[in-house]
Image (tube, rainbow, N blue to C red; front, side):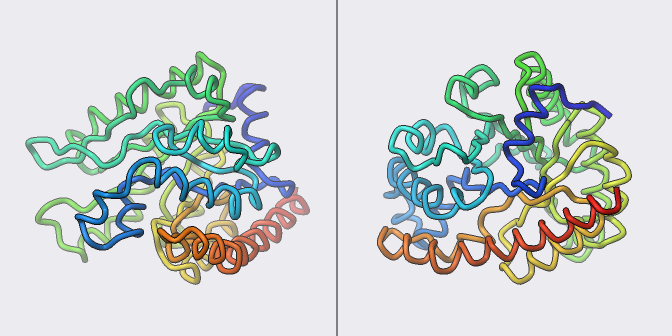
Length: 304
């Protein structure tokens, strides 16, 4: 396993809470956030990057500042949330490198994309504690992953040269013609093998989908060794996610990097409604997650 340098580990400490667990509020989405804010495609098209930036400012000010870290994009949110005072001085900042959406190869595989001109040096210039890269992987289809693995490799090497923390995320996806049943049955293995690919490329911190079972979480923990991994919410409802967090933490996860499960029914084009919902709905959800993290972090410290 590739261990963090002193500088990278300091960044990792900053994205964790006082209990030592990652608690990062993810709101680097663009297309997905537009879909939540408006159901009609014409109305979605009217939602500008500046409007998304204001939504992300509210999520940061009213929710993420209650956590240890926020994950934001460099198109709509950064440096805006810093310059307008939304980001608290004690809240760490991860900056996403991946562009919204994906391209499709002639064979129908997803090709990940990057935001132009955003690299480790630029993340540091923007005030980031570290970066986050996301790619799509189908471990059972090596030919699907060539371009995306190269993106991962280059990003990991770039951040290592800059001695800056990088969180590596991958997502799996259903292939055209693949049944939902077959994909669901294959998903735990796809997540485990996607973890293996990321580790072999030198990932030092992982953000991964919930792999479906306690046994799969335990295998990922054993495979990862000293590399910490956080579970993402993938937009499931809060009650489902709390259960997933319990199982993941019980089986060696190091925290949570999640967004939609916390705020998807709280954001609104009316910012007064949005702020009220973030305060009264999203923050209590965050507290529930933090309670789970603190409980299992305390148990881990006792066991050590």
